Amino acid sequence: FYPLLIPHRSKPKGYRKLEKTYEVGGNRPSALRDGFTSKKIPEDVDFVVVGSGVSGLVTGAVLSRVGKKVVVLEQHYLAGGCMHCFEEKGFEFDTGLHYMGRITKYGGLLSLAADKDIKFARLGNEENGWTYDKIVVNGAKDFDMRGDERKFEEDLKARFKDSPQDVERVFKALRGSLEDGYPFLLRMIPKWLVRPLVFLAKQNGWFGLAAKTASEVIGSLTTNNKIKAVLLGTTGDEGGSPDKNCWLIRKGILRHYISEGGFYPVGGPSEITKALIASIEKAGGRVLVRANVEQILVEGGRATGVVVKKGSSGGVRVMAKEGVVSAVGTSVLYKKLLPPSLCKPGLTAISKLRPSAQHISVFVGLKKPKSELKLPSYNYWVLPNMDVKTGKYFSPMESDLKDYDPMSIPPMAFMGFPSAKDPSWEGRHPAKSVCCIITEAPYDYFEAWAAQRSGRREANYNAIKEKIGKRLVDEILLRFHPELKDAIEFVEVGTPLSSEFYLGSEKGSSYGIAPDSDRFYDPDCINTLRPDTNVSGLWITGQDIATAGIAGGIAAAYITASAILGYGLVETMAKRGLVDDMKKISSVEKLRKDKRIKLV
Ligand SMILES: Cc1cc2nc3c(=O)[nH]c(=O)nc-3n(C[C@H](O)[C@H](O)[C@H](O)COP(=O)(O)OP(=O)(O)OC[C@H]3O[C@@H](n4cnc5c(N)ncnc54)[C@H](O)[C@@H]3O)c2cc1C
Image 1 (cartoon, rainbow, N blue to C red):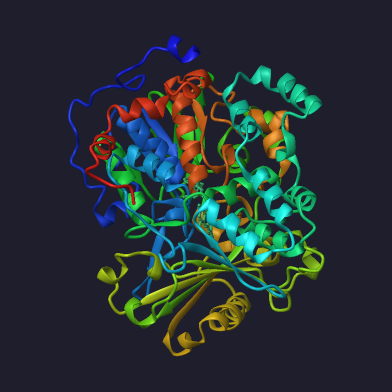
Image 2 (cartoon, rainbow, N blue to C red; image 1 turned 90 degrees about the vertical axis):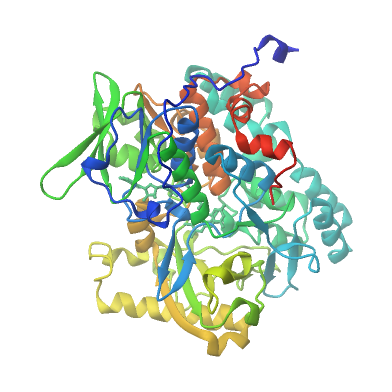
């Protein structure tokens, strides 16, 4: 009955009606590359958000919907973080959003922040049962993952007829349970309570299986290595190796996609970025790129603004009346942006953790229209060296650097065709299609070239990139689609050095901090990877405080905005939280309720 004790509100906490709405230019293509100058900084900024990835933009947009004036500062020349898209030789490529799951929830949260109906298209089709991922493990037949929990279970039982009990055990373990929520709830309670609660939870086994590694749990559920191959085949979604990754995350990602399938934003990921920018601009805020923040200002114990690097002439200060939100990853925050005297607890926690997986991306331009090529909209996960006899999964992230050779180790690869996923593609690019192949590769292998300027690195760096690109095209793209041989017009390769440059991430890691168990269950880590900090007015958002992925970034943004606006755990759990209150001021929600718009 406790929800009855919490008052209903008609508007979010701290809601301030805008005196005027500003001209909304967010939907213009150039909104993605609005360069920083001090003249563009609006007056009376309430919040500065550092980093324009999905978490920074959603936090900014939610605060803007409540009437705050927000400036988002981005070091790259394009806004969007991992959602940014780029064009090269007339080909448009996405970078870090290839699909999302649970679109009813996460698409809804995006639309709520943007106050605009952001459209998504479902991967697969009626004929293939809405397959979103095809897993190809050498030595085993392909497995199509269909976006429906029941069908997925049926498919597993039909394929592995000799192990029906194993499949049932797997599904029992996959189904939601209270224990999955603990790591996130612990981030919303007072810090002093965390240590005793974690102690009690560990003593009493409250964390259940969730804190174990993915390999341990899957090994305890089945001895059938082919079932293991299916369950571990998409480990690339969180990166690294199931021997180290926490089951909480593997389970979360499997559930994320099997419940509704995979989805892609109509018009590409930039449509999400533009919609969120429009929401921020409407409240008088701005999203400015080429704004490399070098310091967060802390004055009188309070975060008051930031300093943006400006050539050799020193920095430009951007001040905020209410606070600063860091959306750049906790390593960057504590190692680069804060004065060292404030970083000790943060650095202690981070020293227990590792950066997540690093990647090579191969962008392939195809000179034929989508309608002619008829490529699938599902993704391929190819694991040529996962051993189905032992169930051992190979990740270059865990191999010794001296043993790593991108030309001799068969790659674990992801492949997708953004042009096939986006129903609006042909309107923008009538004569072209694109493909993206991604494989893991350690940053350290490329480190020797890190100090050289991006785009001007030595010839041997470019030669290696070219070889890797050719190999992945030959062994992955042309293996599955030999008909594309003559359609290839353009190949470009990005390494972990590219990610370091474009995402500003530590060692070019793709998903922030690695999903090891300590990240979720160690009290120091819980007390660091959370929205509030030891500095008043300084907040953290981003994948590190929730999970990797676009959905993780969205969840993190709502967690942080809730904390900033003073929503507590009890209100959130009683469905009187920020999301519930935002719905009351949302025109999209009204349209949806009136059934005048459909989510997908
Ligand atoms: C190759 C790749 C493929 C992926 N595929 C998928 C997928 O298919 N589905 C999915 O759900 N997730 C995917 N992800 C993961 C997902 O994109 C991320 O987990 C998520 O977008 C992270 O959002 P974020 O806001 O926390 O961080 P980011 O998007 O990394 O944003 C951080 C931003 O901060 C900026 N920044 C850093 N330092 C500074 C500074 N000093 N000053 C100003 N700005 C700064 C960076 O430039 C960056 O724009 C992928 C990621 C990668 C890299």
